[in-house]
Image 1 (cartoon, rainbow, N blue to C red):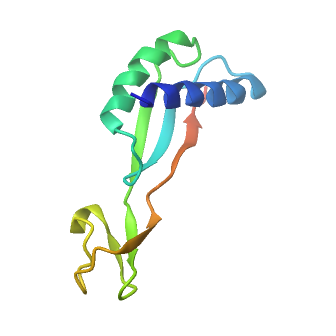
Image 2 (cartoon, rainbow, N blue to C red):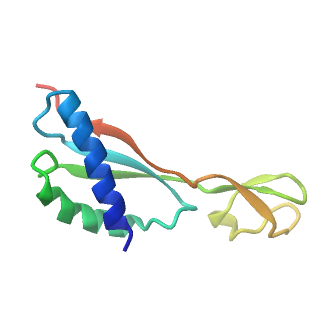
Length: 116
């Protein structure tokens, strides 16, 4: 379950933001996760509830996951299409040959704090 390793990396990056901005805690971490990654959102959610207790600034915060659609470009006809929705097959020409052009990223989109 590499999601825990990823989450500890996220926590370290968020800790830098917390220290640089003189914060005590945050309210939410927003991650962008591409459909074409090997990251399982449910495992991220489960893992976050575990690791958030290891860091005072994360305790009680929320994990928000924005899924990014995996988009492919057909190598045969050039059509761009959502990969998962089309089971990896080009809806125009039926080719399975494609380049993934979106949906491979995993990154911290934002760190949210409540204004007082």
